[in-house]
Amino acid sequence: MPDWHGLSPRHLAYLIRRYTDVGDVVLDLEAHPTAISAATYLHRVPARLVAGGRGLRVRLLSSEPVRRNRSVARRPGRGVGLILVTLPRTGQRLDTAGAASAMSRWRSLLRPGGFLLVRLISGQVQADGGGDRASVIAAARAAGLFYHQHIPAVLVPLPEHETRTSPEHSGKADDGRGLLTGRHLPTVQHLLAFGTTATGEENTCV
Image (cartoon, rainbow, N blue to C red; front, side, top):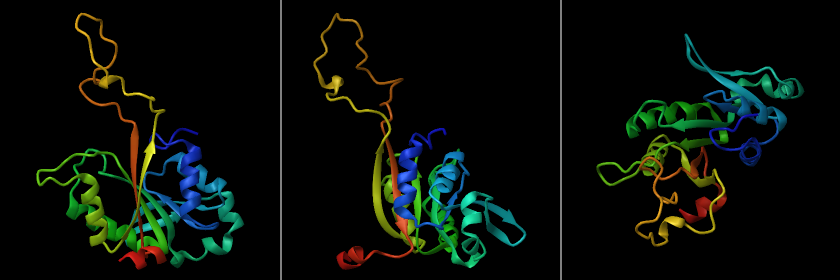
């Protein structure tokens, strides 16, 4: 299976296993084949979000876990255990108000104790000095979700030493220490986890 936005199938399966129980519905809003395959392998129920005349609807995909957990699949009111989503959406800038509105709709699909896992594809600093990560957290709280965890997922093996910090001698050929087309090479995928309810430890810290 292909990587899930840079994350290996094994690491994605680990996240799904950590945030769900057997029989839970797993909804990837982009319907990535690796997310569907990982949910199926872990005996979760993969699903797809479809728009209809009555608004958004979660459609369970036909898979072995659905047949094995037929009683779970017949209870649509149970809700989704985990939603995977990317922000900002393709070709859009991150808008806090818009993100909060979208998260409110996604929250209504989650079961009590369910989680929303946001893949943050940009780390831009905004005009007010805040960043995209802070905006996503603020939007989630406005939607009634609890901030649970920030997961920095390393995408590539990191070198033991940062070569760009070494002194560069004039007259020597370019040794590759410069930026890639003027930018740093992406090495980390930022994932933000939000829950419909706070854990016991988080309630203690509030």
